[in-house]
Image (cartoon, rainbow, N blue to C red):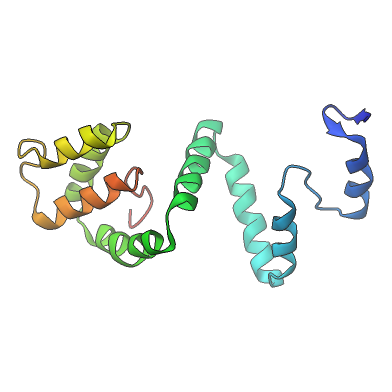
Length: 152
């Protein structure tokens, strides 16, 4: 198959003329899903894509990784994060949020057994309330860092 414009397969060149917003890197189902959006929703998505494109590459990669982690969660885990963890996180004062964030940074790339050992260590969780310990445990087992922009 011939190539046009770098590494784009030739048969997609005609596609970009038929569909002005055609993106050969977007999964096919994404285009079908967009057709179901209202014009306002499409505009909001386009604005979000523009803002995302303006982020530094490292931040884009971090967000992609978070999206992959989120996609791996069960619907029950996603609901727990959405309905229980995030509202609790938003209500925390900045000092408590920072205390949890610093501990999450320590736990972030640890194997499950080491993470559980740290979470059970009284020295590691010293000064934390039971509520904060539960939040730390929830976030650490979701293999994510603390929610960055929620409530900040």
